[in-house]
Length: 181
Image (cartoon, rainbow, N blue to C red; front, side, top):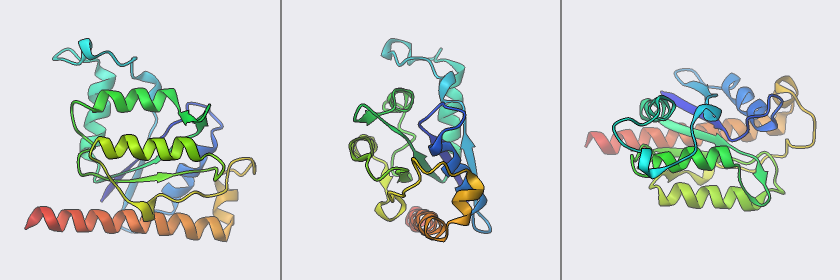
């Protein structure tokens, strides 16, 4: 099973990216979690350019989404909204539909950041993603200066993250069984 992890932050020391890297290390047997790190390469969305000559970065992003069985997104909140780079990437997917019926977990690294988390879930829902509530926890990582090892040393965080990944894996299994029938 392949899960694509997407951080909505381009910062090198992003809490969201560190959290996803820690989750990658917690992947259960038979599950590969890959960090997508090319959001910054995706050009600004322009519907006039969403045609046969769409930018290579957009084509690559779409292919990565198609190849994934599920998605795990962790994004910061900027001015009560989703990060611009993540929203831009999502805008490129509206017409192509890679999120349609795909199980998605939305991890919130800061329980104080409620606006972006809710907005991101709304956007994904409109895009017909299968947002899995049990795979979308708010965990308290932001502001704690935890690196990946620090995250993995915190039993409460590890339990929450394992539970979220388990819920996402379960949603994929249910989805795949429905598709086989």
